[in-house]
Length: 233
Image (cartoon, rainbow, N blue to C red; front, side, top):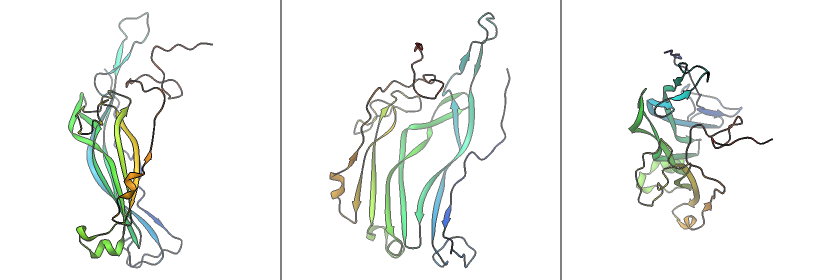
């Protein structure tokens, strides 16, 4: 048995601000409304400090080694823990966009290095982004604010059925019948307090094959290919 362990490292970097060429931080506290110039500030919140992931989700990948030697078969897997951050809001001097999330059915991590679905830690899906005037947002209570514009996202779990990270929990609209991966099917915009936009959504369709999840069904280019497929020349 052998084991390689990688020390903690940054696997991505979060963009926190975009500053104009004439921006000046007058109070040395980062982008704020009392500064000169313009900016776009991105605010994050940490969802998990120890989200556990594993490939494969359970068991191990089989490596048969040399066919002439029956004793060199091996199994291998990858396991790790990582921080998960999500965007909470994006703001400028005059406007602020707030992001709203809910739990995903297909984003569960594992309980530990041995695998097994973690019923507590799961990723989020973006349900809505709402843009407000910053003065309105700061001066009024949540029930008195009037959004400038909102975008709503509608999903089902239809692509790649029976993916191992899906918890299989049924939802009222039958969106999790296939127990697949999160699939965007429509989005719509609303303006102010009007709800008319939801009657004219942008709809998305996914044509072609939709095979059941299989960890090793891919080719050397990273695209889908059934495991029993044979090349023909």
